[in-house]
Each structure stands twice: as C-alpha cells, then as structure tokens.
Length: 428
Image: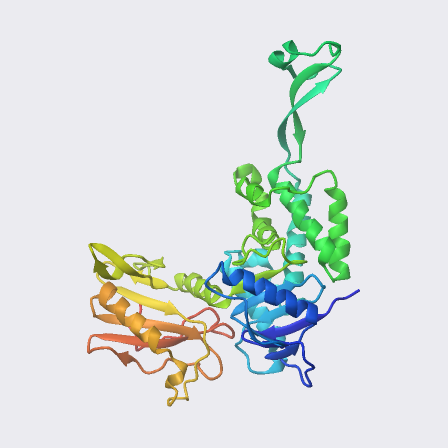
C-alpha cells in the first residue's frame, strides 16, 4: 500500500491541525509523524549546531534549511525541496535542480548520474537514489561480482587445508577423530558486496515503487549467498579501490547515500526507508565550488575553507579563525568568495535587497586579513527571477570592493557565475 507523501520546501510549517489549502510552505502531517519529528529534532539539538525543526507551538513545527527526504516509522514520507521557485507548479523543477546539485556536490560524474534523463524521471529523491543504485548494480552484475579469499578455522572430522598443530596437541580425550583445520575459501562474502546487499535489502523493504521493488528483488536473488553487513561503518572503511575493483567505483556513492554515510545527521537506524537530508547551504557552497573550478583561468589556484588567518591574537594564540568558502590565488594577488543560500530581491532597495549586515562584516574581515584591504571580493547567491544580474559594487574603501553576484542553477548559463565584465575576478 502506498504511504502518505508530503512535499514541502525549506522553512515550511508543518501542523497537525486541518489545513484548508495546503501548499509548499504550510502542510498538515499525521500526529505520529509530528511527535516523531519533535523527538528526533530534540535529540539533534544537543549534538549539532543546526536543528532539523523548531517547535513553534503545540501543533506546529517550523523546518530549518535541510532538504531531502525522510520517512517516519508510521510510513509517512516528507520531501523537503529547495526554496528557490515561487510557483507551486515548479515542484518538479525544484526536484530536478536538487538532484543535480547533490550529484555534483558528491563528485558523481554526470554520465554515471544519468542527469540527461532527469526531465523524464519524475520520482522523489529517495526513489531516484534507489533507481540509480539499481542501474549501477545491474551493470556491476554483468561485469561480475568480485570474490576474495576468506580465512576459516574449523573443528572437522576430515583433513582440509592446514592443520592447527598447537590446538590439535591440546585436543580433549575422546575427540581424536576431529581435526583443527585452517583454510581459505574463495567467496564473494567481502565488505563491498555485503554493503551492496544491505543497500538492496533496504530498498526492497521500503520502496513504494513497484518497478523498483521488482528490479531489486531480481538482483537480490542473484546475490542471495552474500550476508548483510553487520558493521556498515567498518565495511565502508574496508572498501577497496584498486585496479581490480575499478568497476565498483560508480556504485559506491549511491550505496553510501542509501546507507546514510553521506548524511549530515546520523539518522540511520532511527528512520524507516531511505532517508536523505542535506543542509542546503552546504550543498550550494559545494556546488558553486566545483562548478567555479571549471571556469578558472589557468594560472589561478582555488582553496576551499582556507585557514590562513584569524581575526585577532590573544596571549600569542589565534582567536576566531577566518575561513572563507573560496579563496582564489595567483602569483600576485588573491580574491575571496563566499556562497550564501538565500533569495535576494534586486528591486527591494529599502530592505537592502535582503542582504545580511553580518555577512558584510565577515567579508570586510576577510578582505583585511587575506587581501590586505585591496581588490575584489564577492558574495554569491542563487539566481532567480528577482535576482538575475550583479548588484552595483559595495565599496569598503577606494581599493576594496565587494560584489553581490547571482549564480545560475538553471537555463543556458547553468553552473556559471554571472559576474559581468566589470569585476576583476579571474574567471572565464
């Protein structure tokens, strides 16, 4: 039976009260899911700087800027999309954009991710990840599952392999007909295959798509001799990436997504189904970094999260480290760029376009410490219909200026920083 699927976007309100006209910013959820989200969010507030959701009143939750999908124990699925499009009819556009940004942020090659098929692929994020995993597993099975030698020790009534002489000499009376043996078995029971089977089992158990369930069941029959992974984190660390395992490389990120290792929140074991959540700010930062790297001038080097300078010294120690998202350097100068996931409005001058004063203070500190008060810096925000051109520059001084630039996530300029010809940024 298909479970309840609720689609909202960042910063939406979720309530248990009846909603006359649900939309992407306000939706009704079951009481069981509400209670579970409250409990889950409370647990993470003590472990993480970011919260999943904030309790607004007894019947309403206010979501933070996490995006992705999460399935509660009651079976209800909550899909959270980026808040970038205004129109309710743009759910599929937002979903497509999120899929592509996550794929790029995880360094999955476009060909392997099947991004060319996204226009026709209407499934939510969890089912999309499951389908990508199954497609790669199908190719892997055609190329062949790798086996390896596994050491075994048994007490058996026949000779096999090598006798364990020390244990045999301590054999108990009446057990003379048994032998302590050591031998190696050539078996597909290895870390990588156990992880594949664990991910496959999770898909079979929780997918709500009949075609995906059928394909997963067929593949599970082929791998029925391989056990589940009992220690997922340990097996992930044991994943081999040598020449003989090169055909396993494409499936690894999808396997990690399903088994939750890429999630910023340790939800594995606490949710049902394939639950995948990302802080949208981090996804955007990573996406901008990877795409900008492709358009740098040949002489320019990029560093992410540079840690060269701190704000001040105290008792000969650095205090308040300054870590710009992106630092560009060549032999003679550098440029500081910071990516912010926020919708600006280039027409709303009275509200300062939606810019944050704290961000400007932060960039000023970067400019003084990293650039010695000279040059061009940039704050990068997502492009949308109300912000599609660079704002006029902001001058800290006659020699230090800050640009506020849109970054295209869709259209003909997708993946490019719209910086115009006026900036001195080292980009093509």
